[in-house]
Structures are given as structure tokens and as C-alpha cells.
Length: 268
Image (cartoon, rainbow, N blue to C red):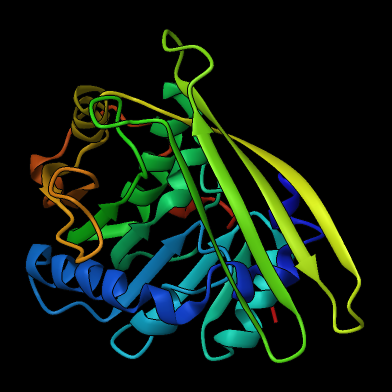
């Protein structure tokens, strides 16, 4: 697991402050409302991280948050104590209910093979009620990926966290890219630690995404994310609806998951 999701997770609110997610979360909310057959009330977020999207969405939905990192879930519990938190892997977690909507933000990027990506999409499908909506928001598709260098972070009341990010593709013929981070973390006593953290994430063509979504059972469209800080075409979303079962394919393994025990550890 990258160090960002382990020992340096407590710095996440300074590395990527929750208030920076307000516009983006509003875009996701609008698409979920438009894609659902009725006004949605319950939302499952898979790969919820520190809960920064949820901190804005929870005003409109009853949120259940699932993440693999207990350290990030601990940060989210501080920020979103009213939300249900569950430690689990988006490829395998199985809960005891369906939801009006399912949302996976950029945590979907950590699916580095088509097999793992399909497993995450299936998890979303089995937890989305018929007629419900799902959104998948990868940072990059093969068609729009460009190597980049970026920076960010902020100062808090008594400490600060800033980072330099370099995203590159060591092998254009495989399905992964690499992002290296240098985090500069200053404690209240003035001491500074510099941490290198490498993240290997997946990169797939748009056609592979659409094929897997259709195989799983979703009706999907690709939409441009009309964020004020992004260029048109820079960031695309997959907005999906789970059709009513009579229209869905019948060969998805695990479709009888409700007959078995839940998989995932709820944090109280």
C-alpha cells in the first residue's frame, strides 16, 4: 500500500483539503440525479479514502463509505462521523444491501489489470439497485493521458504539507502508469520530513471500459467533466444505469451474493 494511505495518511487534509472537492462533488451529484430513475437517497462510495467527496455529498445522500486503508478511514470518520464506514476491497467487498447509487472516484485507478477492473465494476453492479446509477471517475484514459508534473498542499494552523507530483508512463505497451510524489511535511516544532511515495495505477482505453461495463450489465455513457479548472476532454466520467434485471446479462459470477455472508469490516 502506498505510504500516503498508511503512515502519512494523517497529513491528507493538508495535502488535498476537503474544500477543494466542492465543485467536483457537485458534478458527481448532478450526474447521479440525472442518471437515476427516481431521486436517489442512498449512495455507496467504494474507495472513499479520507472522505473528502463524501464531506460534500453527505448533505444530499445517506452515504456508506468503503476503503481498503484503515488509516484513511480513520481520517474520514473524523470528518464524516455520521456516515457508515467499512474496511474492504472494492474488488471483493460484499455488503448486505443494495443502494440507489454507487460512486467510485479516482480510487478506481488502482485497478491495474482488466481482471481487477472488471471485479470492481461487478462490485458496483451487485450493490446498485435496478434502475439505480453509478459513476466511475478515473483520472486518465489511454486516449487522454499526458505525462505531467504538478504540485499542491497547504499550510495548516501549526504544520504544513506540500508535494511535487510527477506522472509518467514507463511502458506505453502495458496497462499501468507511475506517479512519484515528494511530500514535504513540516511539524509544529519546525522539523521537516521529505517522503518519497510511488503509486502504480491502471490505464485503459475507453473501449475497454465500455466493453467491461456492458459485460457486467451497466448501460454506460461517457461524459466530459465540466470542471472549471479542467480543459474540455481532459477528464471523462462513465455515467451508468443498472437496468432492471430482465434486461441485464445473466452470466455474472456472484450474482447470488445476497445468499452468502457479508464481506467487509464495519468500523464503529
